[in-house]
Image 1 (cartoon, one colour):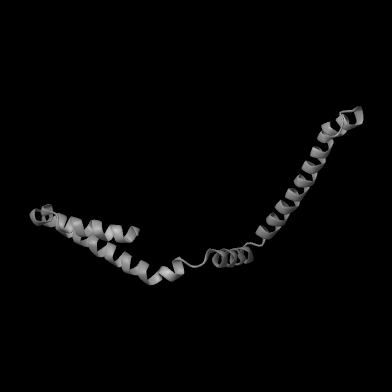
Image 2 (tube, rainbow, N blue to C red; image 1 turned 135 degrees about the vertical axis):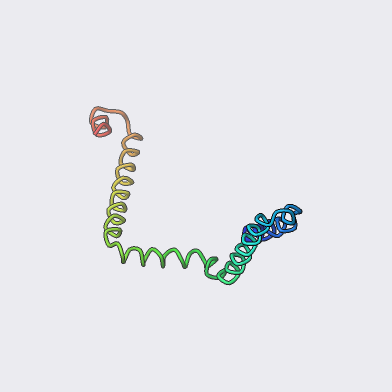
Length: 111
């Protein structure tokens, strides 16, 4: 839609009376119009690639990216482990918050 709008704008500029009066402006607008039409035709040709199904493209790109940068896998595993630890400790905290507030429970809650 954006490239179609750009083509429409460039066509409207070409029909502007100022283009008839100024040859340099006509030259610039003609170049702009040509570029916008080329961009629109390129977008029409590449549309299936650009609009590929999201669930299929993202894992493919991530696999390629992770093969180039192996440290990424280590960072993802470390994040998953930290997230599991956080959830485990959050569940433990909620368990102690639900209990009666006695000395040992308060000590563990503080810890």
